[in-house]
Image (cartoon, rainbow, N blue to C red; front, side, top):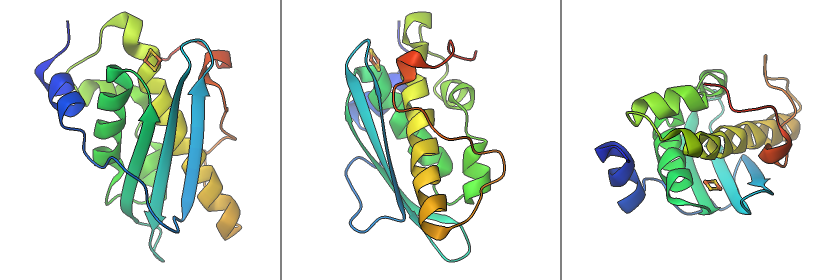
Length: 144
Ligand code: FES
């Protein structure tokens, strides 16, 4: 049912934890399943994501997608991080079962929420970044 990469990131998640004094923090949830995801960013003066950590009360797919998402945004600029969609994360994980696609949205939205918080603190606008939703179960159906 799950790819080897999903199992690997689930059993051995990368970048789990929190960042003290982060540049931005975002928390999103899915009221339907009750899962919650929090993302912390440490962004340097050049707008490059130096470090990223996540914490979740979430299912295995949420853990695996968040772990992969953090790997994909680390070392990227905030603009590049915006291009890391749930589709890109799922591809990097060699796919997810259809019923678990919404879990990957939790990771994408948590990154967007953290970027939004970062932009707000900096007083800047990140081109293309929309105000994040707090509850992904109210957002439009998962993009595939
Ligand atoms: Fe809720 Fe996966 S079942 S995030």
